[in-house]
Image (tube, rainbow, N blue to C red):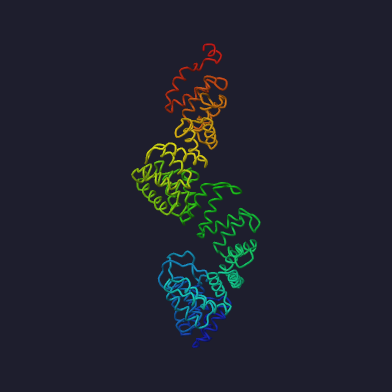
Amino acid sequence: MNSFFDRLMTTGSPAAAFKRAVQLDDTGKTTRAFALFSQAARAGLPEAQFRVGRAYLKGSGVPVSRRDGAAWLERSAQAGWVEAQTLLATLYLYGLAGKRQAAPGNALFVRPPGQMAGAAGAEQPDYVEAERWARLAAENGASEAMALLGYILTSGPEEMRNLDDADHWYAKSAEANAPQGHLGLGLSALRNAKTDADYAEAGRVLKRAADAGLPTALYLLGVMHERGSGLPQDIEAAVKYYRQSAEKNVRAGQARYGLALLEGRGAVRNAVEGESWLRRAANAGDREAAAVVGDLYARGGELPPNYAEAAIWYNRAAEAGHAAAARALGLLFITGAGVHRDTEEAGRWFRRAAEGGDRQALADLANVLLSGTGTNDDRMRTRELFESAAGSGDLVAAYNLGVCLAEGVGVDRDDRRAMLWLRRAADGVVNAQYWYGRMLAEGRGMDADPAEGRLWIARAAEGGMADAQVALAEMCLSGEGGARDHTTALKLFHSAADKGHVGAMFAVGAMIGGGHDVAEDRADARRWYRMAAERGHAHAQMMLGRFLARGLGGEPEYDDARKWLLLAKGQGVAAADGDLERLPAPDETPATAAAAG
C-alpha cells in the first residue's frame, strides 16, 4: 500500500495514523511511517511526538536533526510521556539539547540514538535540565530514569550531589530489575565498602549488571577478580571479563586485556594481539596503554625495535600527563633514537616528567642543564622546580638544587647554600655524598677539611659511583685527607674502569706501567692504554703510542704508534711531538731502525 492509501485510511484519525505508522515502522518502511507519525504528533498525540523526536535523532525515515528531535521530545515530555522524559534527560546529560560545549563521560548509560562520536562542536551537559526531566520520569516509574537520576546526583556538579538520594533511586531502579540500577547500586556499594562482606555484596550486584552486558560492570568484575576483592582471586576469570569489556569498547578493559595477552597472564600469550588491544586503548585516550606500546617498540623482543614508533606513543602518553613516558621521550631526544638529537627538547620532556613526579627525571634534567643546554629562563624554572621539591623533603631534588647552587645554574653561585643542600641530600643520595665530599676537600662553602671530605667520597665509592671511586683513588695516591695507599687506589681504579670510566682505564695503565707501589705489568698496561685510547682519552693515546714505539709490553709497532701519537697531538698533547720525532721514518724497516738505534 502506498502513501496515498496510508493517508486515505487515516484521514481524520490521529490514533489510526499512529497505529498504521507503527505497523510500517515495524516492517522497515520508515519514510512512510515517519509521515504518519508526524501527522499524529501534530494532532497532539504524546507517543507520536516521542516517536517523531526519536526518528529525528536516529535519522529513521528523515535526515538527522538534534534540534528537531529535542523539540518533539520536549513536547511529548511536557505532555507526560515517560519515555520522552527519560530520553530528554539523557540528551541534556550529554549536552545534545541546549548549549554545545564539551561532552561528559558516563559509566552508566550508552549514547542516545543519533549521537555521533567525534562530531564537530564539543558539548557540555546541562545537569539542571537533565535532573528535572529524569526526576519527573523516575517519579512516574521509569526504572532507567531512576538510575539516570542516581547518576546525576552522584556525578553531577558538587552543589547538586546527594549520595543518599542517589542510593535511594539506584535501589528503586534495581528493584525494577533495570541493569543500570544494578550498576549504580554496585558502584555505590563499592564506594562505601569497608569489609570483605561489603565487597562481596558489591560483586553480587555488579554481576547482575554484567549479566545484562553493561560494559562498565564487566570491567569492574574483572578488576575484582584480579585483586580478589569480594570475589575469589581468579586471573583467568578476570581476563575473561576484561576481554568482554574490551569488545564493548571500554578502554581500560582493552588496556588490561592487551597487557594480559602480552604477558601471557590468565590467557595464552600473544604479543601481536596484545599490542593491537593496547593500541586500541591508547587511541581511545588511555595514557598507560600508550606508554606500554612505546615500551614495546623501544625494547623490542617479539616485536622488532622501532624507536620512531616508540617516540610517537611516548609522546601521546606524555601529552596526557604520563610522567615516565615523558622521561622516556626525553631519553630518546638525548640519544637521537627515532628522533633528531635535541638536548633542549630532551630537557623540556624531563621537566614535564619531573613536574609529574618522576624523581629520576630531576637528575636527568640537572645533567642536561649542567651541560650548558637551555636558556637562562629554562635554568631558572628548573632550579625553582628543584627548590620546591627539595623543600618537600625530596633528597634527589635537594642534591640537584645543591649542584645548581654550586655551579650557578639558574641562580647566582652560592657555595655555602650549596653545601647545606648537599649535606641534607648526602644522607640518602650517593651522588650528593660525592659532591659534598669533594667540596669539603676543596674548601668550597666552608673551611677545607680533606679528611672529612675523603670519608664522604669513600661512602659514595662504596655505593658504586665510578666518579667517587676515581676521586678516592686519587686521594689514596696523593695521601690527601689520609694515608697513601697505592694498592687500594689500583683496586678503586679497576672498579671504575670496569664500569666504563675512561679516565680510570688510563689510570690502571699508568699504575701497572711502572713507578708505583704495585706489581708492574707493562703488557697489561698497554692493553688498558689501548682501551682508554680507543675511547678518545688523549693522554692514553700518547702513552699507547709511546709503548708501541718503544716496544714496552710487546713488540714495537711503529705505524700504529705514529697513528696514536698523531691523534694525541691533534688533541693538544704537546709531549707527543718528541715521541713522533724519535720514530723511524715511515720507509724504514723495523730491522733498520733497530740497527740504527
